[in-house]
Length: 129
Image 1 (cartoon, rainbow, N blue to C red):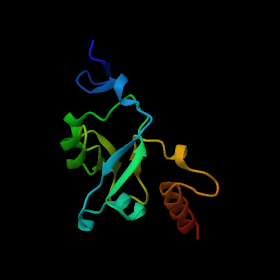
Image 2 (image 1 turned 180 degrees about the vertical axis):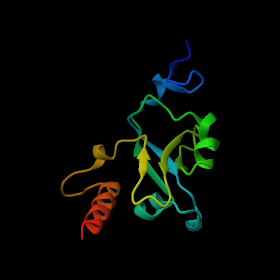
Image 3 (image 1 turned 60 degrees about the vertical axis):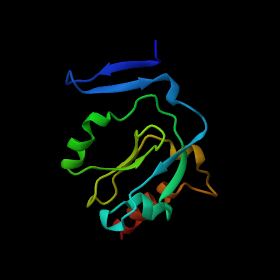
Image 4 (image 1 turned 45 degrees about the horizontal axis):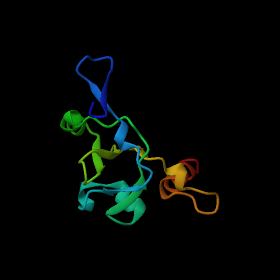
């Protein structure tokens, strides 16, 4: 009725929302941590605290689990200010762990690779030396 269905995972209470209205083609604004001490690698990669990316997922991060994820080491560093949904997660201290709800490959070309791809390739190249 309201465009939201629920998909149940292994744990009966772990529910991901399937939202038919969240697949807009327009770029969505995201906000990352403002304090470099909090360690937002994404803010460092982009060189800004506010970015806009094209969100194309129907399955959303379940915000009921945000506190538990963060308590166990994963930081939710990018949110959509319009609906407070998590768009980017990181694991501080990991060589390179960044997860996104958007698709960086949609805005990446050979001549103009996405900043996340460039950061990942640099990290791999550095670790292979």
